[in-house]
Image 1 (tube, rainbow, N blue to C red):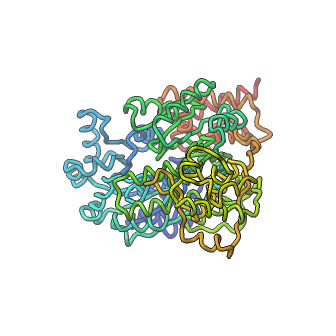
Image 2 (cartoon, helix red, strand yellow; image 1 turned 180 degrees about the vertical axis):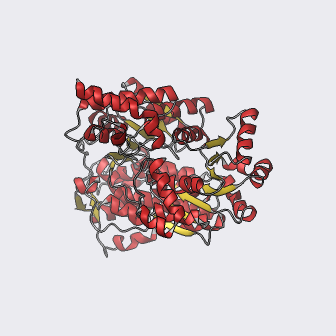
Image 3 (cartoon, helix red, strand yellow; image 1 turned 120 degrees about the vertical axis):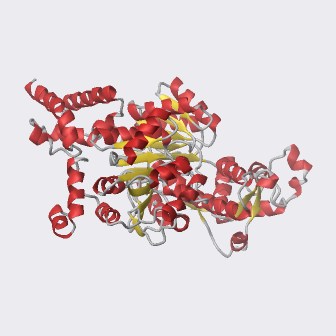
Length: 610
């Protein structure tokens, strides 16, 4: 919506548009940012689902500046608050945070500023919000809005559940006149209902922005030799890029990080077992240095505002599609090409199910988690467009195949697996559903092991009927039967396979099944380094990056806080040679124009004069 319309119909939105340009350096909103901002400015509540990198923060930052008082942002990300506040201060926004990293004197000074109306935005953790002292502080202050970031943390079905989020219903009870905006990048229908119920947002307008991130290439393959598969991926495509690697266990994150270091990569581990100082140091290096790879459990990544993450890799199967989508969404926030790369195996499924069975959750919760794991495994095993399946899970329809996932780029080969599947189901039944994959394969291939003779399985009709397939091919058959719900894993019997009701028609010959033919994946085309326009001079590009780096080091912030790569590219193409021309660059607001304009214009002038 153009600013003249706001001037006529909504003066506050005219002000919002001015702030978008003068403070944040953008000429127009991305729909529906304008609708969300207008709703909050008018005092209404909102629930916002917007993909990572879609511009969620502007939806509460701008209303907080426009409205009278201070906007309070409730975020679970203590380690990132300092960077977020530093970035806002560079733009001239009066921002601060209250968390456990502050001393008593600093905290009292920020509280005084809040009470005296000297802040636009205040970031706090949910744990602090629930303290009586904090609630009294808010009662004594003028609050313009409450923003509940990462709102999916309220969901007890979700992967990032935080118990303190459950108490945020107090916002509606204690501050009924203050508008609230809940924001998340990931929530299926069930989670959305839970967010609205638990936060008492039943009257809030719901804004759901398309989940698609077309710049991300989704690729999923089977584990053969995990380290060598991953090393080839890195060396072929991401030799110098920043990325995030996810593993299931803390031990594995350290093992992979130190192995990558030995292979010449700048890699660091991150998990909840490390000290707070080490985690903060590794996160700081990832945000501020270039080409750092973080190897982490799910403890890392929520709220990470680093635009140039070129890949997210999963070396183990995620628990749910929600967690997979959110974690992969940390790649390519700048809109440039990025990879979501994953390898998985049946052992991942068994390990995850063991973790679920060992949890303290109710039986209902365990069943829900099992359903979500099955959906995740189904995404891995499909032979059609992965993006269509991924978006469909969140209730969104993609009419045509995306052309940017492995299934589209290198369509999977399939084969008629009906007879093999019937043999696999039959041997599971004939061995009384008491054995795991390896023993069942031994029976099918006619092995003569001690275990075969111990249980008289050499006498079964199934013994030796599957010699036409090798061990890996049979593992593929069993894995796909588990993924499609014909078999399940009995964790009480150490991974024994058991038949599901859905297998009856297949066993009776009443239906057929096409299975994916597992083949070694070819390396995808390289698409990783910063994609520069043909007319960009590399020497100028590097000179501008060096100028940005010096500012970032001097101010102790990540380089992208100074300018995103896209802004530097625009400088390379448009070659602004005075302050007026420099002000037209995307991302250059009034404060950045004054603070950085002369230095960057000088770099461009020196380059043109050389």
